[in-house]
Image 1 (spheres, rainbow, N blue to C red):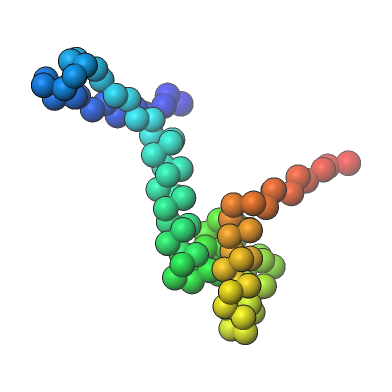
Image 2: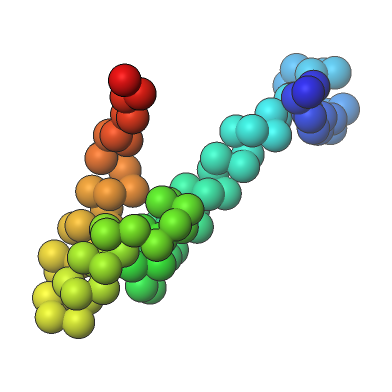
Length: 93
């Protein structure tokens, strides 16, 4: 599968004439997902955890419990889960 690239032309009066900037589609998608996660963490942390996990797992329920009882730890848990937690690796024996 070939990567989709977008090109943007710089105006002619720019200091470096004729330069073409290339924005990779994958990087743009990652930036959009990052912005979405940050907005969801601010509004409703369990939603950010669910979007990041792509499923409704134990961490979503932990985040829901934290939202209903302790708001600040819910933010901490969502930030940890979305940005600092290393994904678990499955080993097939």
